[in-house]
Length: 87
Image (cartoon, rainbow, N blue to C red; front, side, top):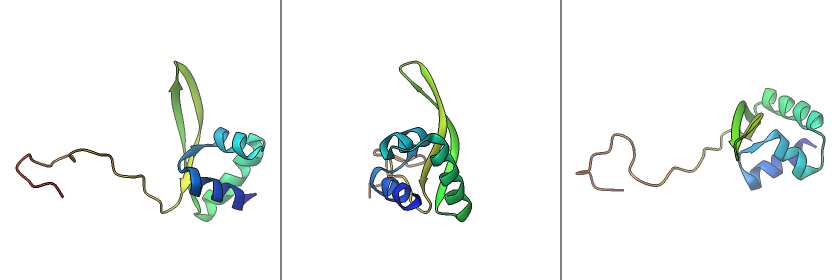
């Protein structure tokens, strides 16, 4: 089961525990125990999050692979002046 979760996150990136459970057809309890084990071993980074979708509050655990960084946001970076050439 842990390899299925890791493969899912490699493909889809940062996901909530409920999204992982729904996509892999597992219970949230199974996913919660597995992500806590993977987090303890250092394979995943997890944190509790609250999201609002269409005014509805959704609480869950956000998971991503350890060592993977989110893509940089487009546009000028904080602290960059307009006179500096863009890279």
